[in-house]
Image 1 (tube, rainbow, N blue to C red):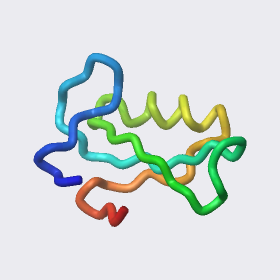
Image 2 (tube, rainbow, N blue to C red; image 1 turned 90 degrees about the vertical axis):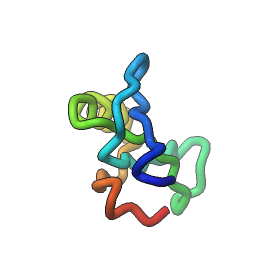
Image 3 (cartoon, rainbow, N blue to C red; image 1 turned 30 degrees about the horizontal axis):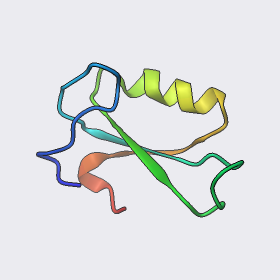
Length: 68
């Protein structure tokens, strides 16, 4: 995923993403599997909370440092 093409995963948002939210649904995925959402600055906290209350959020990393 390149920094230039990443668009925020929040519904309806078309802003450039600057964060990667790595997550895993333990009922569906093996423990080492990481799915990702990307977020703009405005939606990082909202998306993190959404994943966090479900116990899915594993890591939040700046997009520029992400190595998927």
